[in-house]
Image (cartoon, rainbow, N blue to C red; front, top):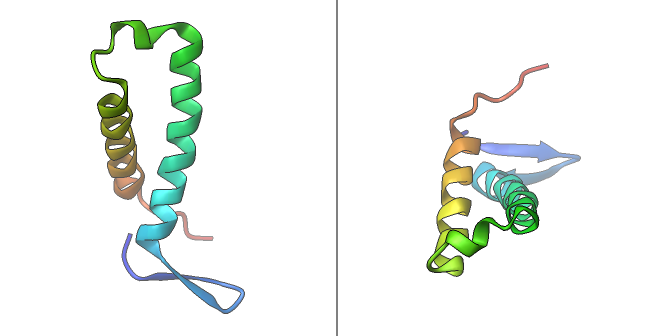
Length: 68
């Protein structure tokens, strides 16, 4: 993702948009992991959550954009 996204005349950085998408996915995945009980096996939950966000952000950035 490079450049900006034009949403009704408001230009948003693609970095901001990809970070928000990754943050939303991180919230969903963290909730699912806590329901399953996976945090019992994690040594440092805050560090794990940060790494999860970074991995999801990298995944969002590498997915090619959709063109309509």
